[in-house]
Image 1 (cartoon, one colour):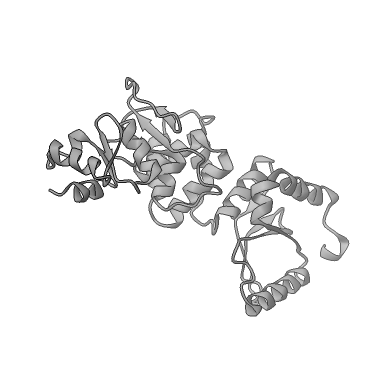
Image 2 (cartoon, one colour):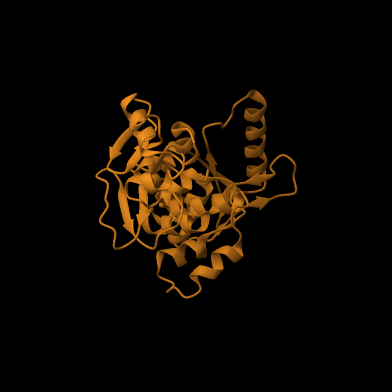
Length: 277
């Protein structure tokens, strides 16, 4: 088999033991021509190989945590700063620019979705890990039974058990998942959605304590005038129904999350305004 085709089939990089249908002579010639690079002994890669995949090959392991979540197309608040890979506990292979987890090997270069989600619970903050899990549930890559089985024997304080306790397939966005968990961890009563009868409102993001609506606006918010008009009408209708609305943005969730949660707590502490009672 052609060397370049063989590496393409492996995702852009592989160990010599995986390139069984390609002769070593052909591999070395490809390296001499600059078509293939040799980043470590026994490892061959295409020059444009994805850095995460290459890291997994270099430690002879598999992408996991946020790196695997990204490979599976799950939503992340931020991409991982370094590849996260898992490899056998007894392995001596390492990578200077990767986070290496010594855990049971996966048998593939990317762990399955469930393993990726549960590993996120150990590396990401609880809200961000739940957001990854909600993304998998929302896309139908996992269901409640998938989550229940592996955590049944875990202590409730285990981060994986806490993740499953917070996960909810009804979550509509990454921002909603993160803020929902942050507020519930503060002991607040948060309803995931409010579906009111009036057509002008429809679904809101989060309802706290039965009267405070928290709306979280992503990048595409108010992309056109029609969306802008609809949002203003929804605000008027929510006020008519006696609800107070707090709006926040992606940047607030990313950079000022504690401030946002404190603001919600302070508004609740001040009590429901007379006009909204």
